[in-house]
Amino acid sequence: MRPRSYMAPGEDDPTLATINLLVYSHPGEGKTVFWGSGGENVLVMISDPEGVISARSLGHKMHTVVVEDYDDLRGVYEWLKDDKPTGFKWVVWDSLTLFQDRALIDDVLAEAAETNPKQSPDVASQREYLINMNRISKYVRMFIDLPYNFGVSCHADLDELPGVNGTVLMPDIQGKRMPSKISGYMNMVGYLHKRTVDGKTMQSMLLQKQERLYAKNRFAGSLPQYLDQPTLPKIDAAIEEWRKKQRGAKPAAPTTAAPRRRRPTVNKPTGA
Image (cartoon, one colour):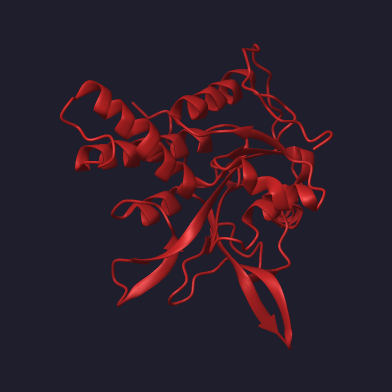
């Protein structure tokens, strides 16, 4: 019997794929500002409420919802999955690095200490690290499967890659091989930084890997190696143009609504 997921050459349509973009940088390079450039089409799950200050000061009007533990994360996921609110084009996790650290100490480790009196509430064992790593991986996959473009922010750190002599700058995600694993789930990974061109220093996003800098773009040819002065609308427009060329301007399939359920508290941009 032919598997339901089997597709012969030409039957699959890559133009229907959502954008799954991981952006990583050193702190202060403007990751949240970049996501905020998408305006009211963006829902940002924030692990640090003060992290949106710079984006708000520039007038960015994205929606936000505070996600500090796995209960918060599950609540937002279930709302998006069941209600499928139509006001958002992008759902962004900002940042996975901060959430992972917070959740390990305040969530996973606290839970372990409650059930095991010998477990220190301040020192995580290998078990707690593995639980946290597996939960992170699970939720990344779950959000990718939703009918929204999905974004992730991470800090930058040095890591090792198989077959590469020396370290590579990659997303800062705790756990052995976790930076490679989470990056592998995404179809785009961009390194946000400052670079100088013709004497002018500007913000830029690297979208094709270099020897010591990790990046990738599975929408081949849609964007240059360096996207200078990057914004979310620039990426949206470039990918949409790529899709039109791939499918001959064929319109995308319509989405269907679902019954509403109780939604988490979302901070709307009005009056922010």
